[in-house]
Image 1: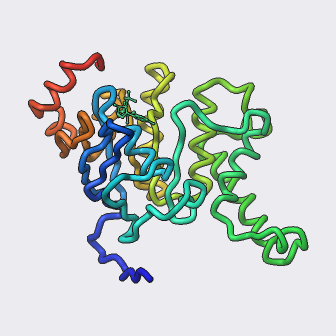
Image 2: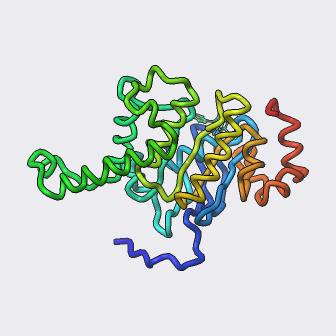
Image 3: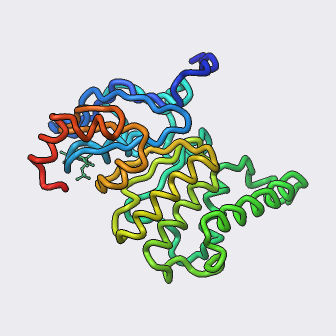
Length: 265
Ligand code: ATP
């Protein structure tokens, strides 16, 4: 049995420890380590094929590292299936939006909130008192988040009829409804225009400060990463190339070389 002591005050919220991922003969990640502190916005960057998505998929438990560990508040998350990461406070959004297109905004967000409840099918079907109390609490939370993301006007609209930028906000609402400690954002700026990217940057910063959510941002849009991240980790060919403040990473000769040699930016 694994015994875990409570994490000390200054310990990281999330620790990626020497993580490697090998697909057949391809080493997608090679001994990558970094830490995330509570309240941080961490940008994960790198040219095409650097390993960003692979790492994101390890964090959201879609991929299993070939070596290394990932610790959330001092405990390994590697024995958790993807549908059980919300319970430990990890929320995510998807690159191409993964909502239920035929459900309303409210119902999509409600599903996100449900992923954090402890209800079971017997209690639910008997509508036991704590289930009713839980439902009222859940509904309140869903409406609060829908308002927070300024989605009241489309709360009852079917998601498939909404513009892409609004769908992305619904996805964010769904992830926030589970009250995550860490929010993993997979290329949130993809498909958005200049104004929408600017608004997204403000929104991510507001979410961090209003809701005390720590954010990991995988993003190609360098302007967005450099303007909102406190800390940046740069990958290239599966290895960590550099990490530090945006200005340190931006002026790192290896990072400049990696980007100049790629088709990005
Ligand atoms: P991009 O910015 O283009 O999305 P990335 O930084 O996210 O790139 P990954 O998608 O993680 O990079 O890919 C890292 C390496 O692993 C690449 O060489 C890629 O071809 C390979 N790879 C990723 N997923 C798989 C997979 N499921 N099977 C085989 N190889 C894979």
